[in-house]
Length: 306
Length: 289
Image (cartoon, rainbow over all chains, first blue to last red; front, side):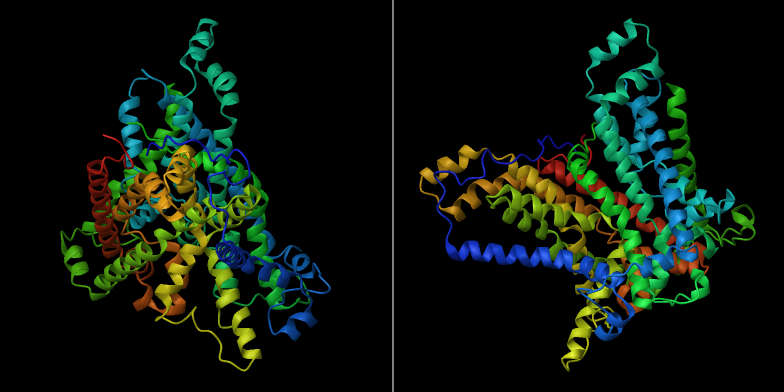
C-alpha cells in the first residue's frame, strides 16, 4: 500500500477564503449540532465510568447504579483493588508483559527490518516474500494452539509474547522508513570504517526515533489490549492479565469477593468494576498524546514496495 | 547482517510456517493428550463433517450478513465524517474533534463492550434513567434481534475516527486553487464537493473498498466472542468463533482446524482477487505488481 500523501497540514490560515460563500446560519447550526452529538456519544461512556469509579456508596445507592457527577469523589475503590489482591496481580502481569513484550518486539523488528532494508544482503529477497506472505494468510487458531502446547508454553507468560513477537505490518513500516535514509550516509560511514552494527546503532537508530516510537506504541497497545491469547493459553486464572479480568468481572458481571481483593470491607461493587475499567484504560490515556502525535505518520507510511 | 536477521526469521519460521504446516491436524482426529504424532489420520472426514454441519453454514451466513451491514453502514461513515471535519474552518475545533474520535481505536474490545454495557446495558445508565421515569429498560445488549445493529454501532464508535485519517490526508492534499477556480466559474458548495472533493478521494475509497471486500470473512473475532454469551450462538456465531467453540471448547479439534483452514484459504484467495481488482481499477491495492 503505497500512499504518497503528505501529512495533514492545516489550511494556511483559519479563515474562509475570499471566494467561499459566507456560511448560512442553518448550515452552521446543523454542523454544530452534529459535531456536539458525535463528541458527546464518544465521550459519555468514559465519563460514566470515571464518575462511578469515584462515587461513594451513598451516591451509588441513591442513583441506582450510575453517578454522572459525584459530589464527594473518593478513591476508595482504587485503594481497594490496588491493595494487593486479584486486580493488583493482574495489573502487574499486564504491565510486565507489555514492557518486556514491547522491548523484545522492537529489537526483533528493528533488526529484521534493517537487514531487509539493505540492498545486496544474501537471501533478503526470499525472506521478504516469506514475511509479506504472512499478511495474506494466517495459520489459524487450532494449529497455533497445538504449537504452543507442543512447545510446552501453555500456562506460561511466554505464550502471551512469543506468538505475536513480530507484526509483519510494523516490520514493513519500519523497513520503508529505513529505506528512505540516504544511501550516502551509509557510504560515508563505511569509508570511515564502521561495520553493520555501528551503522545501525550510531546512524540508523538516531535518525529513526519517530518510526521507532510509532511501532513501539503500536506494539505496546497491542500487548496491553490482548485478551484472547491469555484466554486460550492460560488456564490458571491466577496468571490472568487485566483484560481477561475485565471480561470476567465486568463484561460477564461475576462478583469479586472481599477475600479475593485482600480486604475486609468492599466499596460498592459498581465502583469497583468501574475502577477496574479505568485501570485498563489509564495506560492508553497516558500514551494517547504520544500516539496521536505519531500514528497518522505510521498509518500513512504503510508502504509496501515489492 | 545474518545475525540481525536470525531472530525475526526464526520467529516467522516457528510461529508462522510451522503452524501453517500444523494445519495437517485438519486431516486428523486430533487428541491433545497424545499429540499430533500419534493421532489417527482420517483423510477428508473432517471436511465432510464440517460441510454437513448446519451450525457451520449458519456461521458463514452470519459472517456474510455482518460484513454486509458493516459495508453499508460502517464503510461510508469515516468518509462522511472526514468531509464534515474538512469543511470546518477553525483548526482548533478540527483538532479537538479528531482527538476525541481517534481515541476509541486504541482501547481493547473488552473495554468497548464494557463501556457499551455501562451505557446501554439492562442495568446501565440509560436503562436506569428509563426505569426512574416509569419506562421499561433497554434490552439491546442481550436482544438477538437488535444484535446486528449493536455490533455495527460498536464498530462505528470504535473505528470511525481511525478510518477517517486516510481520507483527511487525501482531502488535505487537494489543490486549493481548484476550489477557487470552480467557485469563480460559479460552482456552489455542493457542486464543488461533487466535482473537486469527491474525485480527490475516489482512489482511496476504491482501494479501501477493495481491501474490505478481500477481508470480508473477518468481521471481528473478539467483539463476537465477548458478546456470544449475552445473545446466544444463533445470532452471533461467526466463522472465527465457530473455530474457537467447536475446536477448542467442544474439543472437536479436527473440525476447528478444517474450518480455520477453509477460512484462511478462501480469505487469502479473496485478498489476492481483490488486489487484482484494485490493479484493474488502476489503484495499488495492498501490494504492487
